[in-house]
Image (cartoon, rainbow, N blue to C red; front, side, top):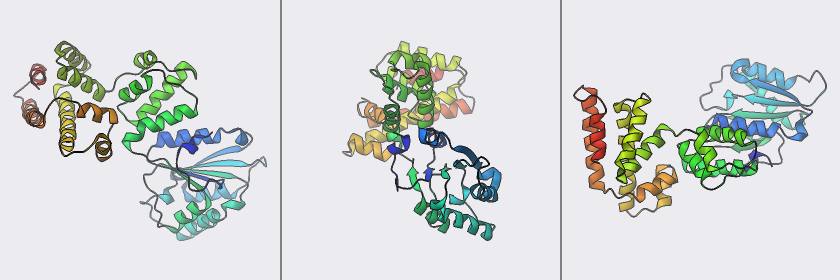
Length: 328
């Protein structure tokens, strides 16, 4: 099973492929997985970057024949003519490309277009032609689907996570897909295709800054002030300034406040996840946090004053930040 099967496809009967979405790491990973199929082992693999070669270079590559009479698998990167920002400068050149795209079905070669764009301009004639002649795979997804997509990739590659290893991976990747995928690939290489245990994740994947701040907040809310102070000192010793840390604390408090307000309006977890496009784990934690809306508003208001004091030089050092956190 190839990874493109995990995403919506427009026409599975078409041989040629268009992979598009904002995440270039994911697009390239899917493309690499696709071309590694045994059926393409004897193909002549050709890469064309339209930003470098231009549309003329792409036309020349598609039009020419293989020197060794082999079928070619042509990977087209940065097909700018699909972008909403593309402006036609040479209409004759574009017409030649349209003719080639309209006749893709008669080519012996296989072409894979990889477009790292959020949207393609489906109003353009050339885009309409391409969509008609290829299998379109869109890889865009929402933030709350990060875990679902990565788990599907791991399952397709027969990689098993044991216990809370997968949850720990997502937390340490701060629910950012590119970071999560990179961390997954690192773990996959470490275990050499075997099971991934929680201790493997914890010993090889560092916590993100946001996750570290989240852990400090959690310790404070649980009145574990010694642990909170230790973690805060670790961040400061690693070179982070009180202003930088305060900005993240303020952001997380604002997030908590948003969740609490929506909860008060009668919204349930899934509705809030969709509305805020956020990590479901963070939403669950926010919903179960004991701080009320009034206390959160006061804490945010004081954080703004503290930030101003640090910036104008009234406050220096970490002691004022620690005093603030202890009184949330």
